[in-house]
Image (cartoon, rainbow, N blue to C red):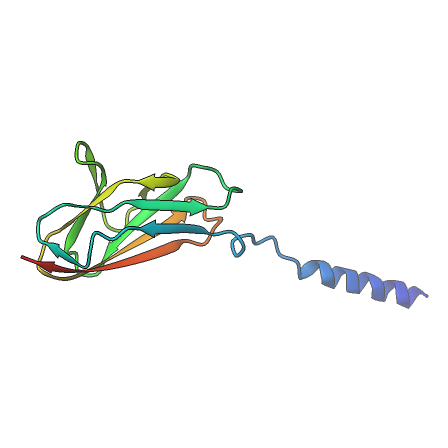
Length: 138
């Protein structure tokens, strides 16, 4: 009887060890971007509206956007035509939940790919990545 109780306690302890509190896999944020087109003109500013969607479980604040370019052929600004703030590469800037206005300005002729990564500041969710590829003409 004593061995049976020990065996039951060991089985119970093994079952508790296999549980995980990792919630990152089930909840996701999603970033949607409206591309201004496949062909853009150099030094011309284009509107790049972004929409951040998430489960209602998470707060409305605390999200970041990171901007990457392989060749550095453009500039991303946050805001509208009246007031804009430059966005540096590989530096997170605040990203509001819902629709926000951004602007992209190509700086060189050729193929340009930008990568936008939306993530939660505390890292509870998996980040979402959007890749946009443009052909820049004079």
